[in-house]
Image 1 (spheres, one colour):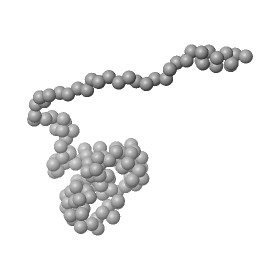
Image 2 (tube, one colour; image 1 turned 30 degrees about the vertical axis):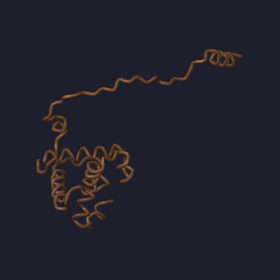
Image 3 (tube, one colour; image 1 turned 45 degrees about the vertical axis):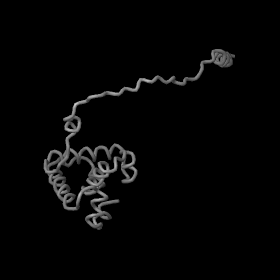
Image 4 (cartoon, helix red, strand yellow; image 1 turned 60 degrees about the vertical axis):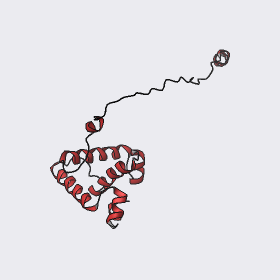
Length: 144
């Protein structure tokens, strides 16, 4: 769903779909557009609008979709979806206006680890049996 389709939804439906209210979404778009003004304009411009790029990021956060699925549903490459999500995340974190946890903050925890469970069960890896006679016969056939 592009932003043109999403913007007609009621605020409660918009929140259910995107995870943020329309006002917060507009604030995020303003931050992204302000950052784009300062960026160098090198290369080909994106075929997705700023709003659509933010929607991709919100879909990634909300639905835990893979970049492959995001790329297919938006008509872009998987690596492009990754770059868009990372770029939007970094801009929003750098702005400091939104309650986004940085990656390092997600790794740091206030609770202590009391128990560590390790699965050490061994499973045999199935490998094809080597048949020496079969390879010798095949090599003899090619030498005639």
